[in-house]
Figure 1 (spheres, rainbow, N blue to C red):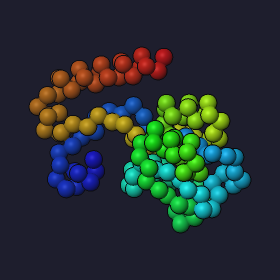
Figure 2 (cartoon, rainbow, N blue to C red):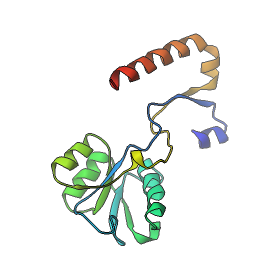
Figure 3 (tube, one colour):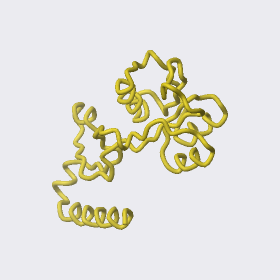
Length: 154
């Protein structure tokens, strides 16, 4: 959204249900260190949230991107399939792939949702022009959105 607005867009983020990166990074096997040098890690695409997640994690482990092999694999289901097939050593996953990886005995390396990195993972984005012209509709939507989020987390 920020690059789009810098380029002249009229976007406004009005809500988000997550302020963390909800990825859990799984490995085929338990490693020491958790991410060994030369490990092959699957992401969706370069510049994606999985790519950013890896970039935030590596310095915390005393590593650089050059220490690992990052490969573009696709969405969370594709990353899990590549992990199962042995084409990856590690992969950041979302549900339901997190539960599937646990059930298959893969090893969670790090839960990024507990890493302390603030991140808007999903959001509702609208144009500022629409928001200004439809304030009452926006407020009704947001009240309903917040109510449903509360129900989902009970």
